[in-house]
Structures are given as structure tokens and as C-alpha cells.
Length: 98
Figure 1 (spheres, rainbow, N blue to C red):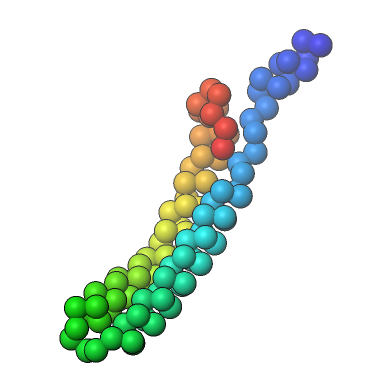
Figure 2: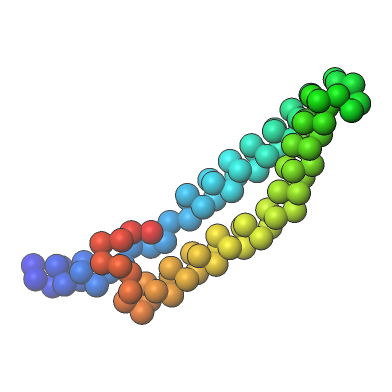
């Protein structure tokens, strides 16, 4: 009985990548759909109109955000790796679960 308690005490939970993967997928879907909607709004308005300029600037902003998407994924994976390293050296944070 005491061996099981001791084993559970030293056993760290595995790192769950579900939240990271789901967040990346949802982020990609939202950016893609948002860009399509903004381009559609932009194309239905007159050039140099307030609505055209607003939709055009927002679409350009989402396009620039897409350029940063790779870096966001790399930072997320690096955070998971750092969490694994801390867990390996016993700095799991006590009751923290990943």
C-alpha cells in the first residue's frame, strides 16, 4: 500500500498536447475565415471608401498575422519542451498538471 503511494508521488503526469493542437487549429480556422470575410466586404465597397479602407487594412493585418503563425507554433512547442525539462528535473510545480 505504501509503495503505491510512493509511486504515485514520484510519477509526473504526461504533457497533454491536446490544448496546444486544438488552439492552433482553431486559430488557423478563425484567421482563414476572417480573412475571407474581410476580403469579401472589401470587394463589395467602393475603392477609397471608409468601409473599403477598413476592410482592406484588417485583411492586410490578418495576412501579416499569418506570417507570424509559424513563430507562434514554434514558441508553443518550445514551451512544451521546457515544461518537460522542468518535470524531468523535479520542478513540476507540486500540484501543477500540464
